[in-house]
Image 1 (tube, rainbow, N blue to C red):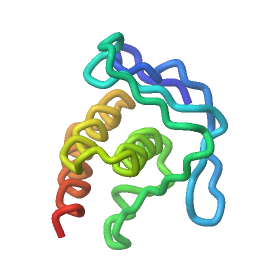
Image 2: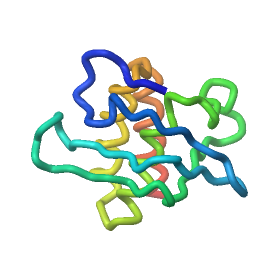
Image 3: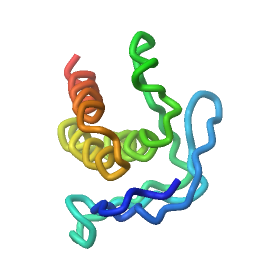
Image 4: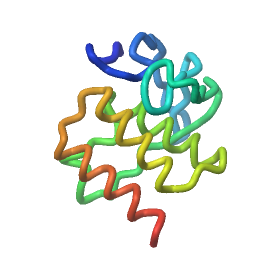
Length: 122
């Protein structure tokens, strides 16, 4: 799964894959990301063995299928950042940027961003 042209993310050349095991995903390669823009000096690398999920409420899975490849890297970054102690708003911002880098449409990004941001405020 190659990234989109013009993306600011560090993972645009990432050629790993996601494997579903026991309801969670793991990657075949570590996933690097430069926060803000490529070369920003603030970098996060999600280890290959880290397991993530793509939580989508059942009634919305028709519009946001959890297995959609363009959602996987953003979901992985988001889950890892939360596990690493980042605040929910910070992790949601990186999630949004990652979805944008993967070419997710603006309306889908907005819905998903609001979803993850609200989920943590419940």
